[in-house]
Image (cartoon, rainbow, N blue to C red; front, side, top):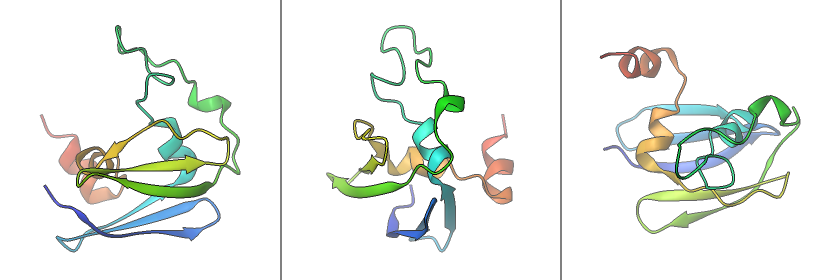
Length: 107
């Protein structure tokens, strides 16, 4: 599993992750927030989404981040949400570039 070599805010609502395999993922902050899997956003028992991503404001930003062990990152969003942990594997799965979408859509 690739690991990030750099995670940086590259715009008001944009985050860029550079990976050790040379890949670069660019994320819109609102998209990342909408994909949170914490217990406040996804029901722990049923797995059904509690958070409706359509309710998130367009100008959502990341106000901070911290490493979680050697396996992920926790983002602090401008809506004061900071419960989700994005593992390196999950963060890579969320990449929406053409190459990753093709790979992730395979059976």
